[in-house]
Amino acid sequence: MDFPLDLLVNALVSGLLLGGFYAAVTIGVSISFGMLDIVNIAHPAFIILGSYIAYIANSVLGLDPIVASILVLPGFYLLGMAIYHVYDVSFERRGDASMRGLAFFFGLLFITEVTLVLVFGVDYRLVEARYLGTTLHFGFIDLPMRLVVPFLVSIVMLVGLQLFMARTFIGRAIQAVAQDPLALRLMAANPSQIKRIAFGMSIATASIAGAVLIIIQPVEPSIGREYIGRVFAICVMGGLGSFPGMLAAAVLLGVVESITSTFFGPSWSPAVAFGFLLLTLAVRPSGIFGRA
Image (cartoon, rainbow, N blue to C red; front, side, top):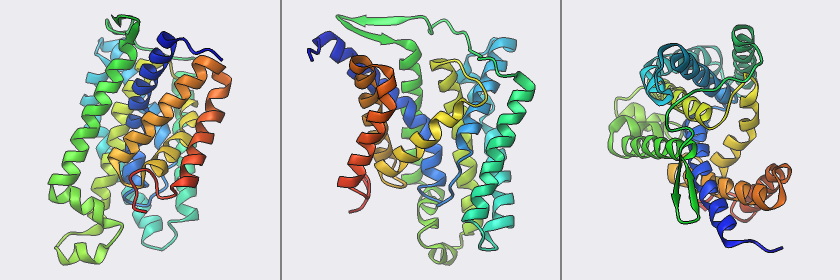
């Protein structure tokens, strides 16, 4: 098959930008699953909650979705801390964090979806912003701002969290809490408190991820299910707990999906993308940046 150069380059650029969005969606799971070993399958539902809050702020107050997501970020952080407290008391301290804990997050997923359906219905919702209909042109390369803005926001969030994890005591404690809780106690750190902070951070990222999602496409309450498989696959493929690896995996997935959709049709995109993920994990089970 003949691949025109301009079409191929634009597919690569779109895939790169899409990968940035996938990184924003996955980063919260990278914290909860990759660092805390908590399988929070309800995370995409909180992302959709963030999308609807951005929609309300945009339609009622005229706020930019990104600005709205930053304003409500502390609320998402506190929500995450509260959810972890219930999870910790009810399951983790009793040693029931595997199956019963998974059922707990299943319940949160469906409760969040049903609540959104009851409040907003099943119609698709979208936001308005001056830059959404704008496309930058560099020769034959097109850069739609509805993808560029989420990409830039995702990179800023990723770099900020990476610096926090690498240069602060709490960040290093979060990375160590799942590996050696006893060592943390010897350093006068409470593992439960560190996990509560980390889980709060993971849910806080859903606020911003929800805003970038509704910038890219209209949303409805159940659309988060489309991303459950993707976010966990990207998290594992990048190497558990590795932000750079997660970003690399997200970009790879975005590029593969974009090229497949452009040249073979969107119906092939998920199958080829997940086949690529499986092939990569078969070659390197620890992930791209994971320890061999």
